[in-house]
Image (cartoon, rainbow over all chains, first blue to last red; front, side):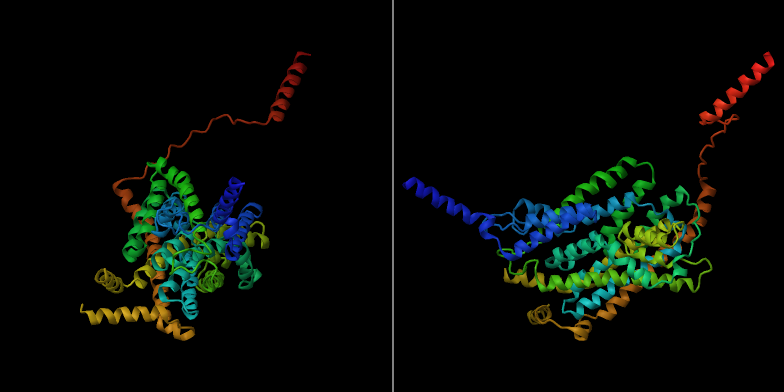
Length: 405
Length: 106
């Protein structure tokens, strides 16, 4: 009888350690959100390479954890915290950029350099969102990290928020990737609203043939131009152009192959999963982290949607503006690809263009502002990082900490 | 830096962190318009400079080609006989040849 009572006491004690006993409503809500992500990835094929690991990570991160066990990404010494290190310290995004560089063909951009301006115009989404975030009560550093969602570039968003507002990283990353997955839903209505049927039917002349030697020179020249301009963007742009040089030089095909396949796949899994796991609704023992389900997270999601819409509209309107001066007109739909969700926004341009004229193929033209947008958002991130992290403030805080210790 | 200055700056940082400003007040306090316009200017300038460099690339390539001409890919010689995979056409040709040979024999 005593053995039975001991056993039931042990079972009761064990029950207290289980996720069932410690489940809270916020945890449950986040698990459901994670499952929605997984469903969208599998059933709707929305950015499955990202939404699936993020969704599963969110489910893992929101299983209620015991206070004295190091399990979650925020628990020092836990396995997940080591995986999260790459996100927290901004290690993964440059590695992803290396892979992106190794798989990107810049020849459409080289063939028609004026389309680069559309990639610049679309970055207005970043800076207007920054203003919006300031108006909603975020600090300048937080507003900068939120604004970069408008760059429609997941790795860049993670990189910058890890530097400027690590406590918002989970919300920013999830917002950025969610809206990137929703590019085919968000962009077409704006594109149609801002263009006439006549404009959507514009056929663009094919670009000139680009020599292999030009393709080899571009990553070196491009890096020097941007890197010297905005040193804050070095980790991202350096890796992007290195990856592209590996590809175009043709003498390092093995390295390019690894960067665009094996390496980027491994990093995408680790990044997606650990970002998902960082969306813990409740974190024990962290006073500066209020959990994922907060009013601030909702504001970030609203600002993220706003930023994608502004970026799309800015690209389209700037193309129309350029047409005032150009002899060979640009199809304004191509401007929407300045949003650097590669290659999704270029595909959206192709799709919307083909619904008007099934023989008008805009994909190759759209790839030019699309890759220019990647460079543009990295430059914007570099600027925001260098401007919003004030060295003197950091120095003072360090001095104070040292004095207190 | 003396301790008073340190405390002043830390106080400012703490104030900014604690006091949330909304609307125009928040935008002004964070120099939102200035940061945004500077940022857009920098992004445009950097990308315009890339566009200009790309536009100049063909000229640079011509200069490079003077010193080191770009290797021309060997052109494959075309076979004088046009090859075809059209089995039906081949069958028709053979049939015609056989028919003509048969007629001659008769």
